[in-house]
Image (cartoon, rainbow, N blue to C red; front, top):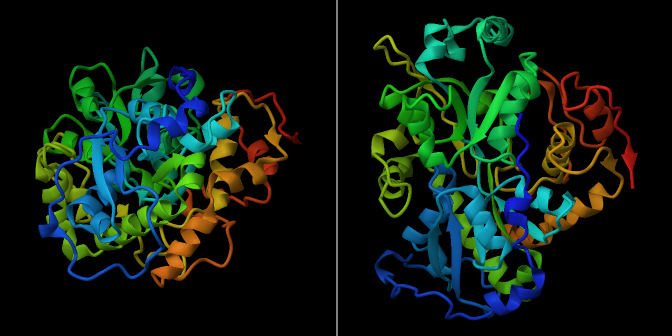
Length: 458
């Protein structure tokens, strides 16, 4: 596996330039506010006078960015007195780099960004204000895999049946399989690594991972540069619709309810703009609630497909948003499956998410899980689990901001911040207890260095 170093953009995280870059309300040329889409009623909560009203928020063209787009288009930002300009970036490295250089106020970010910047060798005070979604990704393979008798997961008796077939396929290949990913520290990548190792495939030895911008991945698949990829929608469904590939697995079936994207900012920014931060979270949280009302999904697909947002055909987006997911294939047959929780932006009643739990709550335990995986695959310069991890993770998720907003919006909160993930939510039936991270790490047979025994150290 190629280990791409975060240093390619972490160098821009110079805290000293932070406030001089972000403090002005006139840094960006904002369009004149369009009041036609604003809600007719005032906000349910007033957090006080905003320290800053004009914000620039970055996003990447994937369906996970939907809450920010809807907050802009449906007037939720304006409802809280915010004039937000959304800035589109081609890939996650670019938007992360701009956040770390204080070029934007906040962004849709990969779930792994604050863990990486706070635990990695190059420090940056990135925090996660809230979760934006759960699930939302899939694994797409090319026609070559189809010709090798690989089919979608839905056509196998169980995971063990699929794993046996896939191991046979991999052993027949003359060279390592090339799989595309959006970035090393994405949840799409970590669920892919988890899936491969559960199949008993060592991604360090048997797979070559290659990074490409999400919107370019279908072209790389068509050109044979990659044999498949693990990515957020709509880029899996586009491959299916265009007959460029077929979906072999959805990440929801690797870990039901896994974290998606976050609303990220810099810690000092939130400290300087506490009221603005709360107004921002409130607007996005209301947008997340709107996005999970199924009657809104059709119009949402129309909105986010526009050129200034995801810039793609509506039918590439509809399948995952409407929960009518097409796995596809190369035999001229559609393979639709009902997956209403493929995109989960706030709450749906599922077997893994029950009230008062909801998708936007920043569980500290999810950060613990991701830290174990970064250590497992040597994506950070840590060879042991740090004893001060809980303290750092608490700083990464300033839950007080989120809890104050949720209470103001009359959203019930979970009773605890550490959530045990039961065995039945993972594809390999391996439970995760966040209070035992070292035992969890040592339980994996496939990892970057099998000879190493993990322990908790300072």
